[in-house]
Image (cartoon, rainbow, N blue to C red):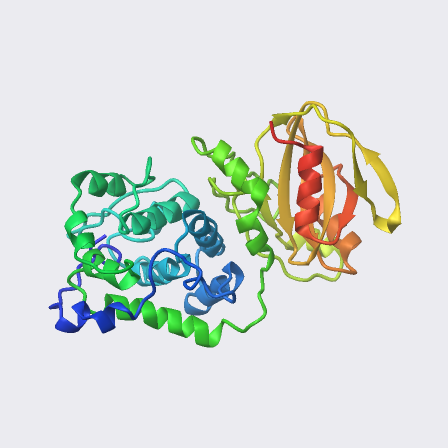
Length: 385
């Protein structure tokens, strides 16, 4: 917490660091009507920004901005600035200091220098939540059952109370920098520099993964996350080629590992053999008891569909398109409903590719104008307990 990636940067603090002008260089931590994350700052654009700075970025971290948005909006803070702080702390997730990448520690929590590695978090989602909770704690907000042990200890020690009382007005990210990295006079300036680069170069590009915004904000997902707060969701296992890295996650859509990115292919067979859609496990096993529901079918057909009996699970997967279909398939003793984002005009080809690679024996049961509409229908077919 007192260093970048656990390495102390020995430099004398300057008078400018404590001046009101310098303190205003970074925004307040809590969001208000006049202090919002810029609309162009989306997880997809931030993901592209990370890849531009670190081309060999670990695939586990490709969707990390989605978790910053998810947990940041839940906590009501400027998560974008915390994301830029993470870039500074981890050297764009290269982890060149005391903290290692497998710790999922994105802010050096508990890393106090001299080889002390700090805390370990089970998932990327947990590590992001721990970071943002620690940031929010600086404002005086009490964090119930914090993810990080460091957060719990600092709250119990009450060491930040005098500091907060010395500050007039809202606490800003610059104020945090004075305590987070007291020996680094350029800490806040570095965070601002990262922010400035993103705003200049990436803020106006087309969003490469617009569906990540919907995933971060899913209302049903928030309910699932609350219900699953005490336990992580199951790890995704995909056995077809190519072999995929998977990470268990505790997140808003019930959990999932965001696995890889897909590219265009000429045939369904090529896609099945070579592409990896983004796959997210959305909900745990459930038993169903609900009334029949309707779903819109491709070709303007309509069909009565009933919620399944027994165990089922909702998944999401994406080839990057704005439309969505629902694929129903058996597997592992349950019925799986996959909401697959597809490109307009390529619905059948991408559905066939997905079924061939990841949903053997599956079939398309509905086509929808948006992933949100499809996800709503999937939860009707596989309702929460």
